[in-house]
Length: 107
Image (cartoon, rainbow, N blue to C red; front, side):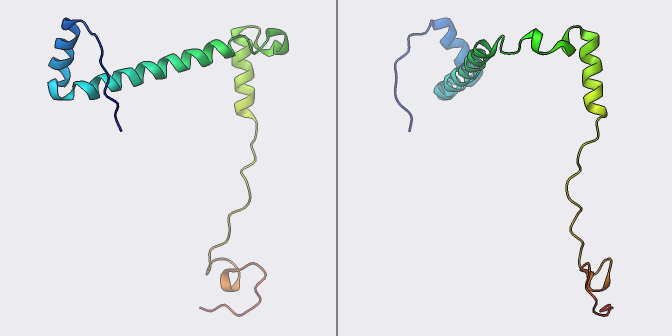
């Protein structure tokens, strides 16, 4: 539920909002603008709190931009675990489609 509030805005700003959003969409337009600004301000707060959390002495591999590129390339070149083998589909592979199933092929 929306809350009615009273804001004091310069007349030129209200005229421009009305021109862009239309006078019947003023509240929605202002609410979206405030939401966008809040998202930006929250991101800045997170950035400010986390700034300096990584210490250069803890990551000598990031000493130069060339070393960072080398480090990233090495990470990308590593083999990763593809996960478990896929589950066989019925009717494919061994008789009955189930590994170890010794029944006659139903086909």
